Each structure stands twice: as structure tokens, then as C-alpha cells.
Image 1 (spheres, rainbow, N blue to C red):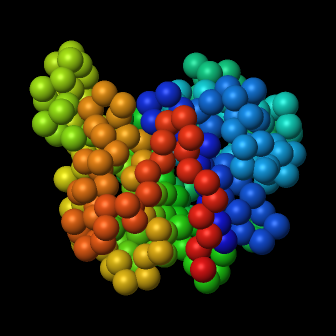
Image 2 (tube, rainbow, N blue to C red):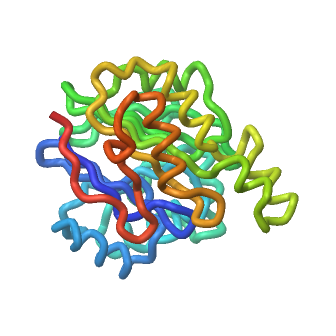
Length: 255
């Protein structure tokens, strides 16, 4: 099982996951042409994808998904609330399947476990993916942790974890007050300290990869995100990966 990022941040998010003969995208916040270029960078063609999992309707996660799915006849999976919210971006294609935020399902060689998260969207979810032996947790958009989130992610071998902002940088930055309040709210985004606190309560003994994701380019730095997570892991800061907005990150194998 392996995974890679096409890019992560407020200008677009997409994560590629592969197990056996199955490849899927989680979200697609880049336009179709940009998505194809970023897939090619990882040696992947859109026609080889089984489809796209959608976490929620915000444009940095959805904006390219509908067009890419139509153009390449890809399946989409999303919650009922997300589908209802998609009207602003155009109706989803016919091959759109509704998922229950508490019910796991299979896509080829992947077992997908959605789980609900507190975020300011209609019915947002994040995902735990497994090939039967290994588990990848994906947690990129939520304002605070919950016991259920921690239960689902406990003991996974790889984790893509939101480190959206540094609380001091957000407070002292140039964003308008209402935007600062939204980002820092319980329905907003995790700051570095909150991400580290979530990581601290998980069983980390089997972790092979920890990736800081969805970093704000205005209110965070890679160094601060790495420092926060490395302090919990007791590792060198360089061991913690970062999903960059432009470069994403290259394939990482879960052994």
C-alpha cells in the first residue's frame, strides 16, 4: 500500500492512494488540466483511477472533481449532505454513490472507513483506508478532535494530519477578524498544537509515516508544524513529512 499527494493547502488538495490494483483520489481541488499534470508527475494516468472520494464540498477539495469524473468516467463517493451542497459546483455525474459516514465499504483492494468530523460544511467526513493489513488515516479538515476521530485513527501505520496554522501567527496576522474566528473555531481548522495533542493520544507504536497537511501559507511554516509533531513523536523534525501546496509529496510505501 502506498500514497502520495498532488498538493495540499487552501488552493487545492488531492491525495492519491494505491493498494494492489486499486488507485483512488481523495478529493480533487485542482482543475482537470492541473490534476492531470500532477498525476503525471507521479506516473499515473486518470484512466487508471477507480474514482474519487470526496471529504466535503469546499472548493479546495471539490473544484476539479466533477469535471474530472465526467471527462474520464470516474466514480465519485460522497455523503448525502455533500451531494446536496454540490449544486453550486454543478450536479454530480451519474456515477455518484452516496456513503454513510459511519459505514465502511470496499473499492477494489481498498477498504474505506469514513468518519464524521466537526467542520463548517454540510456533512463532512474524513477517511481511514486499509488493504487488510495496513491502515492510512487521512485527517485534513476539522476544527477540533473528537473521541470518535481518535478511536478510528488509533494504531494506524500512516497518518496525514492537518496542521493548518500556528495560533500566534493567525492571531497576529492580517486576516480579518471574522476569518480568524472561523479558522480558530471548533468548526474550523486544527492548529499545530491541536494536531500535536491529537497525535499524542493515539497509539503511535506502528506509525511509519506522519505527514503535516493543509498548511496555511500565511499563518504557518513547515518548520513550526514539524516541530509540533516531532515533539510528540520524539523524532528528528526532518522525519515528519509535509504536504506542500505546489509539490505535494512523492510516493510513500506502508510496509
